[in-house]
Length: 221
Image (cartoon, rainbow, N blue to C red; front, side):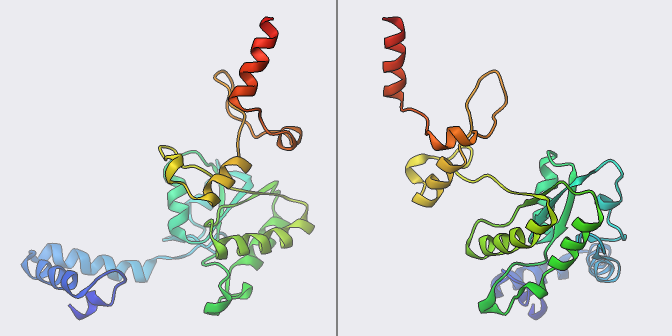
């Protein structure tokens, strides 16, 4: 119970239930958990290229010749990488920072894998770096630092689109979410896939529904 209670998110009651579960489980089931904990500490390590967690070096993603080596998606933690892989939509490479800038907590740039990322961009034919960091104060600060350090290398730096989540409701969205949704808006078409608006479109916001109806009425006349 004491050891279970050391884990994040595990309170005393949950630790008690887990301990009694282990006591009631048969020997094979209990030892399977023990061996799994032993093996993960013995065999799992950080990939020397992307710093993902894996049992081999380089990890299966970096070793996959079918991946697009021209794109690197930068994430904060290995769990973020897993989330993107589960979508099945991204086929490039990754780079795990193993954290984000947090000066108040003593996390400085040298504590992250930024130097390794810059070295990868210099060595490989990388055309785009996607900054897939959490959209909060620390994540944005880390993204700004990375963008500044990547700029001299002549690589395209992009970030994830922001705004309203699919299935969300506008009335419950805060002003920051709505602001991002307007900034990251896309052209709407039933025939063609969505595409980001051009610079001209960004400088001239789309007309309202009333203006569109008035325009249509003028054409009919």
